[in-house]
Length: 548
Image (cartoon, rainbow, N blue to C red):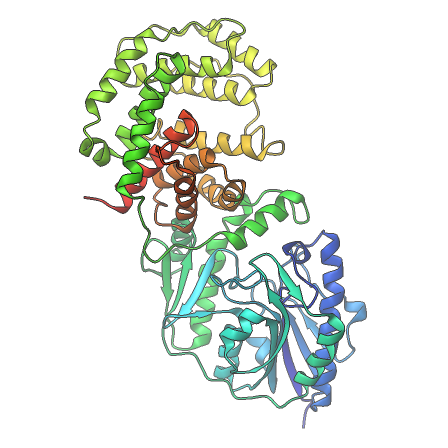
């Protein structure tokens, strides 16, 4: 008779003492400590499995920290442990061969729950089977059930424990406080419990229903990538996979999920361990999936925003005239049904006519706001095919150089790009995404204006090759924008997401909620620019979520 071997699948989120996302990512001080904590828990589990009569324990490390390798401290690992690390599939068929029991250590709850760092397989999708959400522990147990291998125990937080519902022995290592915070039990309490749980006999596992696996993603682009692997597209955000066995369905779903998660390479900033990488990785845990029934803003909120915007821009300043005309010009293209129902044609015509009073001179020392309003006025007139005075190329170029020299590089870039789309190219040599490593706020405004330039200010569908990548960046940025409470920027993200078909997503709903919460009783959001953005976001949502 050969050696009795157990399979121990391990992750890091459910290890006692791992209570922040930073501990999950290679290159951070917290991660170094987490490696030691994980190794200690594995050793405790191995001791228990040996006491149960196993001679060897195959340890499959499923956590991807960004290092490209195992998270275990191999030099400190129990001699009876056989460490394995397969980045493509930690639950691959060879790991289940010749094992007489399976256990899961350091696990976390499924995507969509309030567990600590809850997700399933990756940070972009949620898995379900016959309407039931699946965690990674569920996947391992289902594979074990199909292979006829009993399960010994699972360890992790309280949310996963509740979801498993007593189907398998469980060691609670922590209580989830939020998606990104947990309160762990002392490791010295958890380690002996792991040994005791591992020493108990395994239980047969009930298989999952013989039904397709459904994957729900956080963007339509992710679902489209998943569908390219052969998964069937159910709707904008969902795909499903079928197969004769659960292993076959799982393998196909894993292939689809891997294709979808490829978007993260460009959407997440920095390298593993850097501050920007940590920020964006934590944001992915907070980014919600699509709601079952997206809700448009109330008609009353739209009406109040429109009244407030028209009131704030009825003054005689150049800035007010330009903002009024540009916003209504955008609204006509972005939400034509709303525009028509509210009979805004005459209001737009009057606003455009008033642009004749906006001078187009760009003298040295002109403020960025005044310069922007003059170029906006010229742009609207030109886009609408109306008579307009020319912008003198060398004068515009000198003004852009002045702005850049005074520290207004974002304004200089945008005005140069606006003019270039109209055939007047005097752009400065400003690096692409010049503020990405300097200012999160400035870089996101740069990003939203890439959408505006590409769509000619929301008048046409996006066509730039980078649109999908820009969209994923906006999704990753959404939790940060919501946390900052920046309604002006939130509105810009919302109408950009609308123009790429993401009005039904969780990010869009979170942004719209922030804007609605900050709308004052009079309908404004504090200033004319933020109110204009809110108006475009509200009307764009009404157009897409409540079509008539």
